[in-house]
Image (cartoon, rainbow, N blue to C red):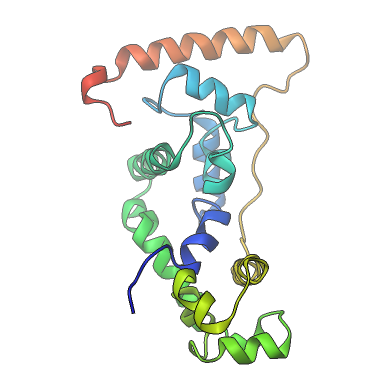
Length: 216
């Protein structure tokens, strides 16, 4: 059988936060440092702020699907954002790069799915019976490619949405509380805060590598 298209696990991860397993200390560090140094460009940082992402902790809790709704943020930039957050964590926390690189996060999620029998998904028995041909656990289903199983099992586009949603719900996010952004000191602080952010953006851009060496 030809392997084409993404797996259901790819679609599930697109709906989940970029990171899981962050401690309250990790979240506090990411929130305190704004966007860190060298993240994208000033205009893209402004778009992220306008979309409600005040700092790196907010980005860590966002899903790829949510981030790509921001203008000019596509999959390549989502990957760049995630790599930037891993690097920022690694500067502060020993072992953070190993714990939170993309492969490690995916392995943890798949390990959780392996412990959940397919029969526990909140789906009707007839559909579970059809899916059981793929394997006994949620990890077996997550590893399947929709382009292959849909025609083989007579599944519809509605079924695809239901399966992805059901799998995502088996991976609850035990995220720590996100601290409020540090710019809620009253309406009078708004303009001065905005000016401070613009000045910080200019400093970051000046300190960043020349454009020809930047990552997209």
